[in-house]
Length: 120
Image (cartoon, rainbow, N blue to C red):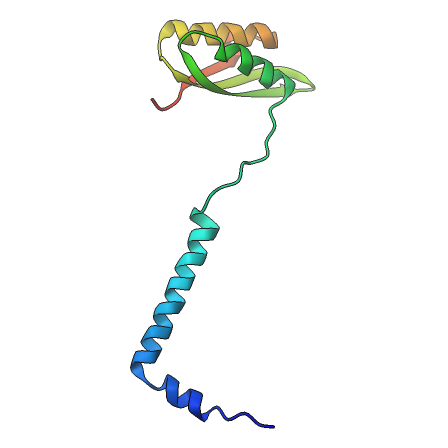
């Protein structure tokens, strides 16, 4: 049994049909790009270490801090530095409190703790 492609060729020879087919293909491609690159993102799956969780819990208790993110850098199992990004009231006293709390919990120098304010 052979299949004749003549009716399909005749149908596709119309300029309107080719334009509609190209438009459908372009919409499908745009939808694919959106789903792959711009759709909802899954969480990274990163779980904070015990040290990061302890610092985070204490930083969130400081007045003027509404939320924070903490990253602790370690060398041979010991904390050597930390970066804290917080949201809330940006002021000198708030930053000093955050720096001192993190340094005390991690048993590192306050100069090894970097504190930044996030977008307001």
